[in-house]
Picture 1 (cartoon, rainbow, N blue to C red):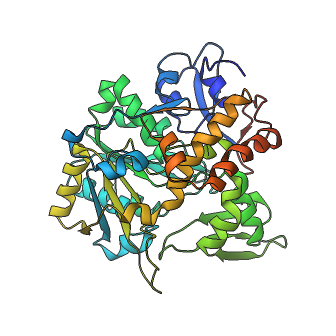
Picture 2: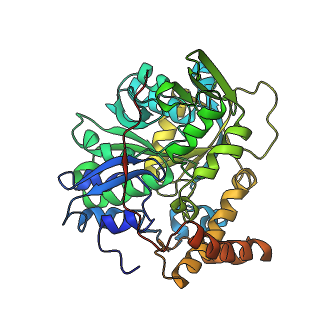
Length: 423
C-alpha cells in the first residue's frame, strides 16, 4: 500500500484511531466527521496533514522510552502495561458519583474535585450530541452538573483531541479525559505545542477494548425495539450500578415510546464489540499508557449483587501522582493500595490482545497492508511469553483471513455521516 505520507493515508489505509489530534493541529485543512462503519475520521484537504498532524498521530506510531528503574515504575508491569508508579482500588466518596459512573466513578470524581478546588477551569471530555444522541461530540465542562449528565461510558466513536484548542484558550489549566489512543495523541501534541502542555492539569485515560462504530449503537437500538435512527431519544451504555445496564429510549415502529435495556454482557459481549474497526484490533495500548492517570474495572473478583461500583486506578506520571494525592487529601476518593497482580488479574484479556497485536501487524506487513509502528512497548515479548501456541496461531493466520474479508488491502475513503436527526 506504500508509505504513510499524510493523514489521508492514515485514514484511508485503516490506521486512524479517530482521536482528532490532526484536526486540532491543522484546523484549516482537516476536520473530523462521523463515518458510519468506521468511527470518527478526518476529512483532509489536498496538501494538509503532512506536518505536525502526522507527527502527533497515534494511529501511525506510538512509542515508550526504555525502562528506567530510577524513575520508580513497577518493573514487573512495564512490559505488559507500560509505566505505572502506583495502583489503587476504590471509588468516588460521593455516593451519587459512584453510582452514576461505569465502575466506581473515579474519572468523574477526579474531574469534580479539580473544578471544586478551582485548580482546573474546565474538563475536556465526550458527551452525547444534543441533536443526534447516538453520536458524540467534544465539550469543555465547567460544572458538576455538566459532568454528571455525561457520566458513564460512551461505547461510540469519539474524538476528544479535536477540542484541544478549548484547553489552549481556557483561562486556567484543564483536565483531559479520553481513550488510551486519545491520551497518546495528547502526549505527542504536548511535545509539539508548549502552550497546550502548560494548560494540562492532568490527563485521564479510560481502559478500552475497542471503540465500536456507530453501526454498533444502531444495531443495539434495533434489538431494543427502536429500529429507526431518527427515533432514538437517548442512549446509555453503562453506569447506574456496576457494570450497569445499556438503556435505549425512543419510539418503536408504531410510534410508541419504548425503553429497552441489556446487560453489559449482552450489549458489549453480544453486539457492540462486533462492530469495532480494524484499527482497534491492531492497537497495543488498551490501558492508557501515555496518560497521567488511567482507570478501569477491577474484574479480578466476582461482583456482589447490588455493588455500586469500584475503580482500578493506575498512576503513571508524577503529575498524575500529585493530582491524585491532592484529591485524596480532600476525600474525593476512597482508595486502598492494590498489589501489582491485581492489574493482570483484572484485565488479562487486554494483555493477550497486546501480544496478539504483534502477530496481527506482522501478518499485515507480509501482505503489504499498513500496520502501526510500536517501539518500546514489548509487544513481541508479550506475543512469545503470554500467549499460548494456539493464541499465536489464531492471531497470525486469522489476520490473513481478515485482510481479505475486510478488504484491508484497499484504501477506504472517509464517508461522512451526520445522522438521521432525532424526533
